[in-house]
Length: 436
Ligand code: PLP
Image (cartoon, rainbow, N blue to C red; front, top):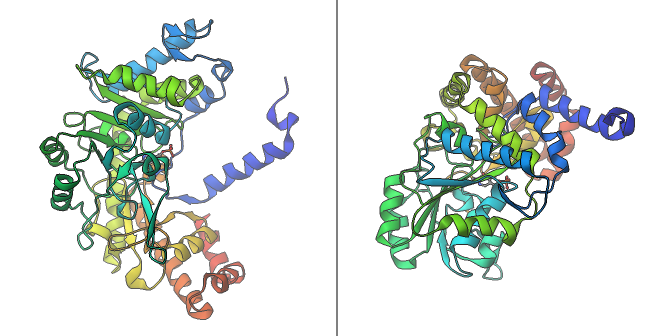
């Protein structure tokens, strides 16, 4: 048996390059993290060889005695991580990732063309919550994800000035639209979710409530974010963001007379997926063991403290942070007052080895020209960054912005004239050295 290095040096080298990029740069993408050696060991284990279609003790292939135990361990730890009573809640640990988990819930609980309401993409929602692009020129809307192809979606929004979810508008719209499902949660929302209010709106309209806690599941597990379980019918999550596991998805469902269990299990397999990725499931299981430790609780606390530190430092320099701050692991930096787009700033950050992403900020109308950037703390907190380190990161971001504005003055507004200047800028080179 040859190692990857011996068998395929070309690919080995690419992976080494990526490893080096991850460790040399400042990783601020809010949905990313650095998972543990234990999780990596699971991903590269013999479990990747096994087919196990079906559920524990009800498989379509032989040889699953061990795999059954792995999957049951993952289910048990998942329920424990969120303090759930197994007689009241069940979990499916097989979704390949967050998007398939969400689509499995819709497949299970909705009929084609049923109505749904999720947070709009420019307001910080996720594509899988139902999103359309609008062409003013052609006066048409286009479905972007399968969610909006197969279901009728009326997104709700954040208030353009405060940046908080506009629950009053959601309530009015839900009363008229009468959705079958309301989806809470998002990818770029820096504040707590008001679950009692969501529940009240869902009940007033006789509809289901689902929370997609992908971004904050590590915070929920440690009590650093409010728990959605008391209020929701279904909760989905990814496992690779603040939870710090491998890439995968989970679906939690209430066990009651509505029999979500059968419907959701059948939607995952055979409706949408084939054989579960048991190596991933093992990785989730071992990460959930870590989530139960005091170390992980401290980690989650620090993730939040670091987000507050970077928000405060940027605000103290006069920059505008959407909603005026954060209650979780991320901030949205509104760059519109600085007269630069999120896209341009992201490119300059990349050039100095700071990795973040352009993002819509409250008041933006289109996801195509985002007015800001999203900054998250989970990954660097895993690397033991504390508040003082994040203040230094804020200083680097400030310096990067000053360089970006200077280069924009030289190039004019067009991105194609701006990008070549990044290659030749001595200030970028110098800052990159310090970031490394
Ligand atoms: N849900 C939310 C809120 C997300 O932010 C994401 C991804 O960023 C997903 C679902 C989709 O997860 P995945 O990329 O694993 O399909």
